[in-house]
Image 1 (tube, rainbow, N blue to C red):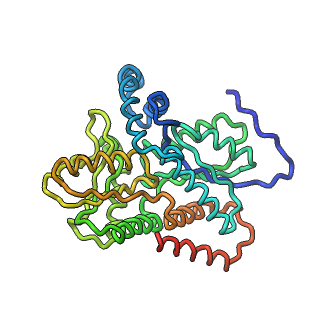
Image 2 (image 1 turned 135 degrees about the vertical axis):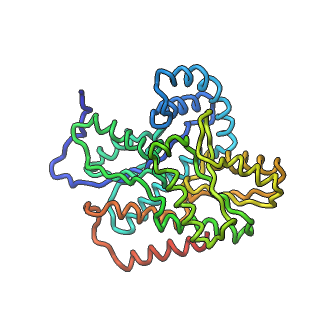
Image 3 (image 1 turned 30 degrees about the vertical axis):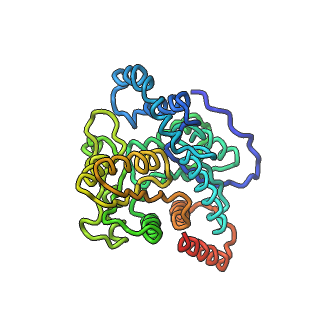
Length: 363
């Protein structure tokens, strides 16, 4: 095996620590060509589609990549912003804010964002961190609930990059934060603030991304971690039985997926004459195609077409101060033992925390 050339070594250069935030990814543009490139990479990952390559590749290249990109591109166009893809926009803001929050706490670290599919790639961002002199890297996938289809795929990508390095940095991974108190608190604040502005519906539907049911049977903890997140959020909001439900969205193919399906639940609620349903997607920390188009547009249409009246979509955590504070705590906890801090002014730190709480109250 040939290893990639190493950055020029500088004697006496102090070791640095890096944090790599990772998210799923997005096409470069809302066009069929860009969407085809993205889907080809995404759907070729054996972590995502557990079908033998000999059977799957003819289906992928002969059918799916000939028909789906045009439809997907139209969906992306419906949610695209002047700044670009919402997922990339929000993820970049999270990385910038995390860098600032950690800096205020005295942590001298480099923070970068890598996408599992598309750009900026995980490998390219690890190259940049290494070029900056990082000999320690904390990899923090922005997936609250662990799944082989997401978190493990990020670990695969980091491992593939590491296999090409002569000198591999010390690596740590955050595998999950589905029950992290700060994450749950931030979710609750987004719901409460939405209710303060728009009133409260009779039901809060918590919609998580779906995966094939077979993954649960094979030992993937994703389903259980989604249910725990939902239970903790309901407890934090003091919801009673019948005031909240869990569902799973984004089904693909003919295999049986986790149930109940969000589309079916919304149709059922609409047919029952439900006046209003509030929907939150706790498994996504950034608004994206699956939240803005699948829920806020298609989900609302399904609900109203079946007889329902109002569907209120509650935005993802995005750049909410309580979420950035929770993300900072999460990173800080996993950075323990690595030298990342200069002298910290306790008074300045307390002021920083107070500002974050005040901003959260104003949101």
